[in-house]
Image 1 (cartoon, one colour):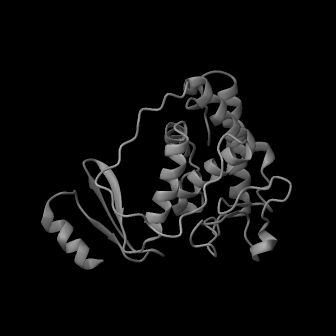
Image 2 (image 1 turned 90 degrees about the vertical axis):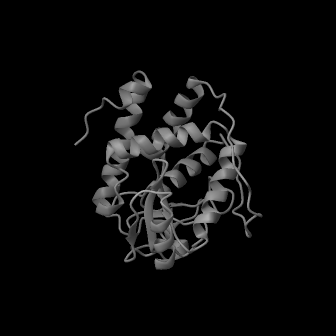
Length: 228
């Protein structure tokens, strides 16, 4: 990884490169054309990106919805993994899981192998209406505000969701964790293993408050709601 760091710094194609070598998965963090980029030598990130691409290309509304959720996560304080809240990755898995639960999308199995490299990747402009985006965002907030069993149910998109018999923490020996989001590829990894019980309660509360804000008006009302 340090060899990659030297080459990136010498290339001049990116901004300042920050090595984060003490992380569970060491990365190099930089920007390319103003876009934050992490470099790692592990292939799980490639598989993760491929899985999200499959969902986004098959369901065009998901990409703008994911952008809205990511922005909301930063605004609400939920996307703050450094203090034991959620990572951006966990938030995207929560989104996909809720869309599977609401039957807005169908399950995509994680790939076992990577496809050949592609020269470029383009996305068509989504044709989804604002009304559909609002409805799916509303469902996302409603599901995690009132329906999801944060204490017992594992957010897992590895296999098709069975609503009447979802995967439980006890099935994986994760009873000690306050809540659970399972990595689709590092299957023994609970992405929310450091999240505390009170934090989980605060997260659920913010989903409920955001549902009420969205339900009472427009997208803009969601980002005007005061939160501590």
